[in-house]
Figure 1 (cartoon, helix red, strand yellow):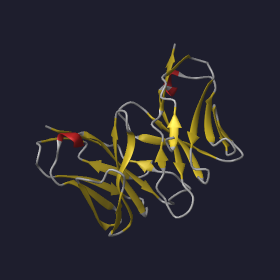
Figure 2: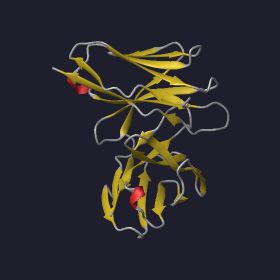
Figure 3: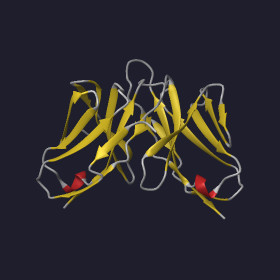
Amino acid sequence: DAGITQSPRHKVTETGTPVTLRCHQTENHRYMYWYRQDPGHGLRLIHYSYGVKDTDKGEVSDGYSVSRSKTEDFLLTLESATSSQTSVYFCAISEDRRNYGYTFGSGTRLTVV
Amino acid sequence: RKEVEQDPGPFNVPEGATVAFNCTYSNSASQSFFWYRQDCRKEPKLLMSVYSSGNEDGRFTAQLNRASQYISLLIRDSKLSDSATYLCVVFPSGGSYIPTFGRGTSLIVHP
């Protein structure tokens, strides 16, 4: 399997606190993505990156920010966590944006209480 | 019409059965298509790409029908281990490299 790891795997945090999730890849892929998955909604794109320091918003970006200072790391920050951000967060990487599909990390289960 | 639509199921089939799922897409210019498999509480994993000429991988066959704008996944001789949610993924044409995921079709294979 492709080398992609997410940390932490599980987290419980309080409303209003900042939270940072990390995605680390060893594949040197150019494209990285953050998704959230919720029942009834499927996978929804939060932010994505097409290179170091090159990022853009997805369809559900409000309340989230990202940074990519190195090819291998893509960080997702919840600036002030809310209960609506309780979800499973998946990072994905892609070598070629259309022809090879994605490889997903194992996910982070985040609970905001 | 949603961009990518799948019947959520669940499809409940006995071992050994043949089952097929369809996924319709609205953008006629869509370029690349994939099927992913997601087990309960796990990440999606690439199952197979979908080519215009159709492609087969063991018991799995994927096909693309551009005229009717759908892709299909056929599973023959179902195994208990095939129980999962199957997601279709459609990549647009042109400069965008953001795909659209279907919400998935749940398959339950019982003894």
